[in-house]
Image 1 (cartoon, rainbow, N blue to C red):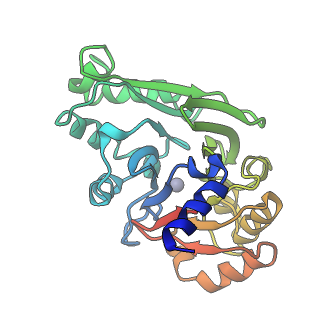
Image 2: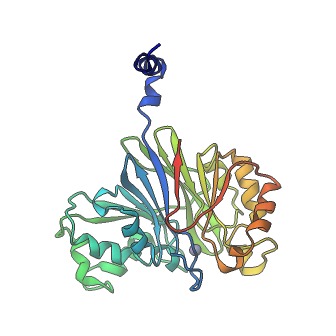
Image 3: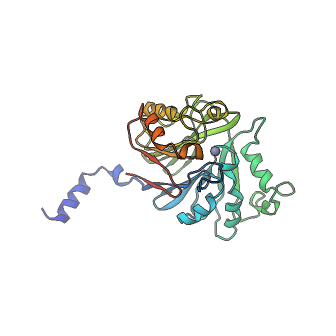
Length: 298
Ligand SMILES: [Zn+2]
């Protein structure tokens, strides 16, 4: 059989849904936490869908430069997801909005994040405090909220529950969210489904609500935040998952691969110990993220 005939036969035998599956790539913008000295940008991720920078997850300090280095385009963004409003997850948003002044974009840009509590504003209020006319720290960007700019930043606050909710649908993108425990800070884990592929983001959390294992069920990639080492206690353990907990969640959820990010000085030097702890439960592929690392879903 000629090569051409073989290819034709293969195409005929391939179910249509497989041919139609989008190309999905996760790129890490920032693999670090809030510390100086880790030589990493703070938390940030982009999901490339068919070559377009479509979904942005978190945007901490340094992520804006990585966004440029990755070749991502603001005009291609469909949605921004904020896992919570800590500085290391949001600080570069003003830089992103300002740079959008120099590009052509006419479709509104939705930003999702958590509701408020005693410690944090809601995502809507957070965006207003940054940019609103007569109120915001950068009120000169107020036309992105009041209808005058070529596109509008549309903030949405997600009510936290332990039930998984669908918060966004567009074409073959379906985004789900669930509340997670990050000390006293409202925090969300997201699952971004693109056709039959999916990437799940833990954000910062310690696993106490047992919601992530449900959200991440059979996901292609779980991005888990490796902010504390084995044996963490006190504040650290109230805010973040230990490596053992990451392994338990990854195993229970039956994920296909694990990416460890939000790496901090206290975990950076403990790669082998972390791996051993995770391996007590989870045996699948495991990678430690660096800034600009790329993970393709086959
Ligand atoms: Zn963080």
